[in-house]
Every structure is written in structure tokens, then in C-alpha cells.
Image (cartoon, rainbow, N blue to C red; front, side):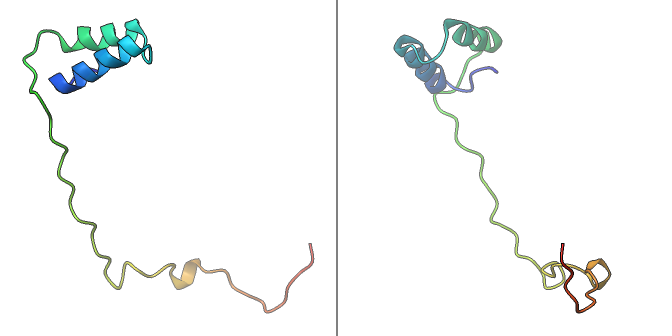
Length: 76
């Protein structure tokens, strides 16, 4: 997976120096990134607010999918 920003590349280099990732992992990411001009930082994607459920969608189960009760409990 290639780096997305210069900040991410620096973070991985620091993790490499600290011994938290292997040199192979760093080289793989660096190789996949190539010599691209990367931005300093990448902003997170904007998330949309959660959708509100309508009255119809909030029903749990339809009548046909419910179990029919006989009124008696059976021992197992």
C-alpha cells in the first residue's frame, strides 16, 4: 500500500528506527509509492450524518416471519 502523504512517510520512518515495523514493510510501501509528489498532509474523508429511519423501516419483523406461538412450553 503506497504512502498517502509526507507525514505518513515520516511516521513510518520513525517506526522503522524504533524497530516497530520491519525494513521490508517500509521498503515495500516506499517502492509502491515511487517518486510521486506527495502532499504534506491528507485530510480525512467527510462523513455524512447517520440516516434517520422512517417509521416503516423501524419495524423489527413482519407478521409472516414471526414464530407462531402455541401457548405451551415444551421441555427439552
